[in-house]
Amino acid sequence: MEITLSVLKADIGSVGGHTLPSQRVLSRVQEVVREAVGKLLLDAYVFHIGDDIVLLLSHTHGPRHPEVHGLAWKAFQEGTRVAKEEGLYGAGQDLLKDAFTGNLHGLGPQVAEMRFTERPSEPFVVLAADKTEPGAFNLPLYLAFADPMYSSGLLLSPDLRPGFRFRIMDLAQTERDSYITLDAPERLYDIATLLRDPHRFAVESIWSRRYGEIAAVVSTTRLRNIAGRYVGKDDPVALIRTQKIFPATEELGPPFALAPFVAGDTRGSHHLPLMPVKANTPASTFFCVPMVSGLAFSLKEGRFSEPVDLFADPVWDAVRAKVVEKAQEMRRQGFYGPAMLPMEELEYTGIAERLKELAREFT
Ligand code: 13P
Ligand code: 13P
Ligand code: MG
Ligand code: MG
Ligand code: MG
Figure (cartoon, rainbow, N blue to C red):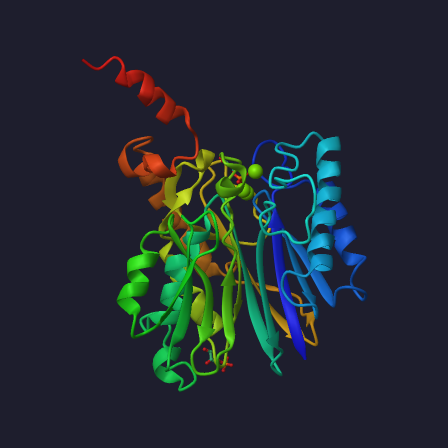
């Protein structure tokens, strides 16, 4: 059976700052989406990460389908109406355009979709991040799909041995989408050359070289490219199939224990480690440390099992304790050097404007 999974995510308002959506907003979004199950959709699951609401939808209509995207748009609009009634902060923040034009690309929400023929057992993972950017997934995905130090399946399984194909997007191209396709392991150094710069390049999708099957998709929307100014961080989502011809779920997890420094956190303008957290965690009042959650599901004829939370077991409490130390260490130096983003990535214009004024005082 050919199934499409669509993950659509938006920040439509949050309680007491950029923290989490209210229960009423979440319920309204859930209601709208659930009404479509059994009609347009095969199944739906709604959760949040920080202040972003994530819709996971299964159906048979293919990616970029106007009715599926239209449903998500309606759910986010309805949720925004409740958020405005409640006076939530940044109500409708990620809905950057007034009118729906057939699909959600370019309107603000993050979108990751894949179509495939369902395997007899189809395990998959939804990653959802808050307070960071699409390139934040670059290193974990590189390690899970191309490095045998993390992914022992690359050595142990003949299905994985030919490696994976990486499709990487150049986020600096704003006129049209621009991609390069590189095969691991032959082009490993070229892949690393691009992925080392997560502000400029992001993994868009990954494919099994042996079977040509899609393995992973990442949302790559840069809000600044749509709005022309800072309107919140891009907060990416990803869909990843696991097991058998793909890395095992327990090979996808460990790269996140590395918690690499990524762009994001306070005012979207700093570097802090990407902390693995449980799904439905509010953003942290510790500088809005970037966070990622992972939910794994099994799929049968397009219906979801209950999820398992990938970052909930005791190992991840120990990881988080270390990540907090790493984050505190960086934030101790405040605005200085690598703690704050470089000029061209700085999301607020205050410093650039001030520098122009200060230039006049130089003699
Ligand atoms: P189980 O015997 O628990 O199914 O383990 C399979 C496995 O290889 C895990 O990596
Ligand atoms: P969000 O994109 O999650 O709303 O982040 C906004 C921000 O800048 C928090 O400091
Ligand atoms: Mg917000
Ligand atoms: Mg957010
Ligand atoms: Mg955001």
